[in-house]
Length: 147
Image (cartoon, rainbow, N blue to C red; front, side, top):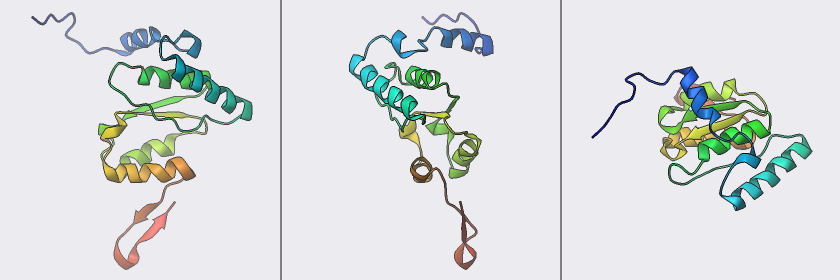
């Protein structure tokens, strides 16, 4: 039998309380020792180089801490965390809006990245590798690329 405690959606205060229960530093994270050890090395190396940490892809079933780790990475790097989800990015233009709002050092977390449509994936790769995107405007002989 289902029992509903509250009929309303969680507001900002409830959401903040929920996230405050999560660890915010690597030292507070419990479990996955090998992953945490490698992640610590990557973060320390990035800080020593005074650069953002490289691209990281977490995968696995729900509940393993992928979202929590993205929060930790942002906190450890003193960076802003920008979150979105694969299903919400249906067109390359959706991703373009997010990418143009990023600042150097920001952490972009795409939940359920495996659900990104192929055209959005193809748009994401050059953004990750070259920190730029090529956007084709118009069609046929009038087509031109903006980047």
